[in-house]
Image (cartoon, rainbow, N blue to C red; front, top):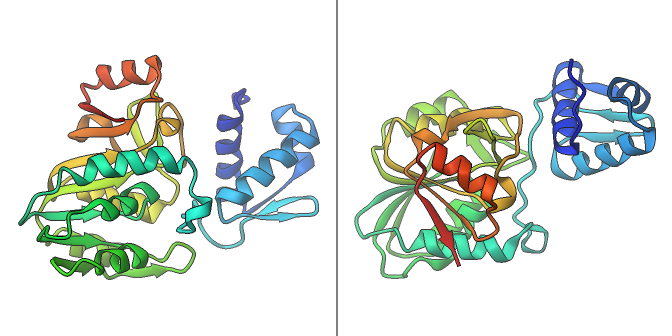
Length: 259
């Protein structure tokens, strides 16, 4: 295998190893990647803050479960919160009375509900308990919570039941997050059942918008769920660099910058 040079590539490779063999040692990773054990420990500590892996004395373990990116609803722990607020505020202006909308479990998409006009009448379909709770604060919103398997770590519903239920709701517009947007033009999520649910959205929503801060662009995660060519627009922040803009131009993506 090619040895990943960048930390982001190396960390993704570590997650893939854990997904396959459920545990790994610091020594094994140091030898595999040709890096110091101290660097491996830093990588594992970083991953343990973002994913459901456990640090052990000699390495890390996953146990008998899939790798899951942890979603924080603790306001103080949301990364890049300032730019996410701006992205969310811009997205909220796109919602119209009478629409049927989907709001996924991402921190940015969840924030957008804070910017809805209280008079807005719409049907909101969600798959996360906290997002449903947030939407229920608005008297004029009808809220539909997808059923299916509830994942304790993320409080999301997913799986075949949720996917089939989603297909029964024709949506006017869907707002989804992405854990990463690769240079290959693909959209990625950190959890495979959530990725499968997101992939179902493209067949039922007339318009799909991705809300992602600029730090997610030109990065990768474990599970592909779609491509830039499938979306109607990307709502991001002014931190998007020239390489990111070239990627969007190459895939003819309508980019909306939240100022």
